[in-house]
Each structure stands twice: as C-alpha cells, then as structure tokens.
Image (cartoon, rainbow, N blue to C red; front, side):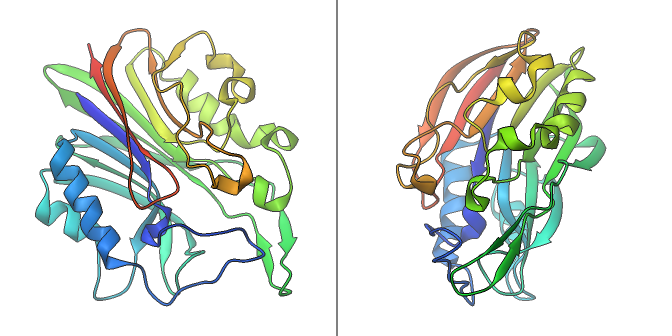
Amino acid sequence: MKVATWNVNECVGITTDLNNQKTVKEINEDNIKEIIDKINEYDFDIICFQEYPVYINDNISLTKEIINNTKLKYYETYDTCKSFLFNGGRVGVAIFSKYELNNVYKTLFNNPNMEKVSSSGEVYHSFDKPIIKTNISYDNNKYTIITGHAIAFAPFNKSEFDYPESYKPLEDLINNNMDSNLIVLGDFNSEKIFELIPLIKDKVIDVVNMSTTKDYYEGRGEVQMDYILINKNLKYNNIEKIDNFSDHYIVLANIIK
C-alpha cells in the first residue's frame, strides 16, 4: 500500500517568518494543479495533507479537484483555524484514500495558547491543531490510519520541549491503537518526536528517518518534521522524498503486511 504525507503550506508556496509574513489575497492555482499531477503521477493509495486549505473560496475547492481528477474518492478533512497565509480561508489536515474511511475520530493537540507580537504590531496566537484517526480495509486486512499536524513552536521563540503536554493526545491515540495494523503520518513539528511521545518509542518504526524540510525552514536547515510511523505488525520499502512547491517534501513509502 503506497502512502504519503505532504505539508502543502496552504497552497501558497514558500513563505517567511511571522515578522515578515504577508497574507496574500488568493492561493496559487498552479500549486493546486501540481497537487493533482503529483497524486496521479505517484498513484498514492492514501495521502495525508497538513496545512491543507479545506476552504479556499466559493469558486475554488481543492477537495473537489482531488476527488474529481484522481483515484482518491474517499476523504476526511478537519479544519481548525483560519488561514494564516491567504485571506478568507480555513486550514487543517486531510486524508484522501482509494478505500473507504470508517470509524472516523477527530481530536486536537493540546494548545498552550502562545502569543507573539510581530514587528508590525500584529498579535498572533498559536492555532488549534488537528488529529484524525480512521480505519480502512486493504487487501483483506484492516488498518488504522492516524494523521495530524502539531503546533509550530519556533515562530513563537519556543521549543516543543517547553510544552511536551501538547503531544499527549497524539501519544495516547497511537498507544491505544497499537494492536492494529497501524500507520501514522503527519507533520509533527519536531526532530525528536520520540522524546516527546516516549510511550511509543519501542513500539513503532520511523520509516522516514531523514530530513523532510527544505534548507530555509525557519532557519533550521534541512530537518525531519514529517513522519511515517508503523507498528511492528508491518514492514516497508521504497521510501521516496519528492520535491514540490512547498517548504516540505512529499514523503512516500510502500507499506507491506
């Protein structure tokens, strides 16, 4: 089963930090086309998106474009905040699948409600960040899929280790589904995820284990923020890191039962 995770940066493209951020009036429609083209080129069975524009405007729907122009006909979205990068939008996470999504459950990372005042005087607060769990059947086996997008701490001059409790809902959800054929995909905004969710450290495999962001990501250089984790019921091969318009690479793996 070919799975992938992709932070699409709200379909806007490369952006800068909070002090230099400029909200645009609209997203780049060429980036929507690239998403469709990448899905069709790589023929994902499941792809999980972060910073996904659930609502763009009344005339443009990325969700409709995907289900109308790819083989991914089943989906679930969870928008938890207004768009940070373009006016009027709603942003969150999404799962698209060739296979029916069952028993959908949604929750949030714990939000420490951080605050930052930009050089222009605008006040930013940390957004609620979403997690989705669902089940699929593939090749006569059942799988549990979990995806999410953790809070970004660096723009607030904080570390994820200042608020490790933010990750507790993710840790609990993973730990409580360890008996399944479990696949966890997402942008968890940490290079050291197993220090933040230690209860799963010896129970899952980090399929990716390489940098997934580009060298201008928050000034950190190339680091791993995006993960595909599987429990020990599963195996994997054919890891790929795919370039695109965003500040995150697409990360792809083939999961084997």
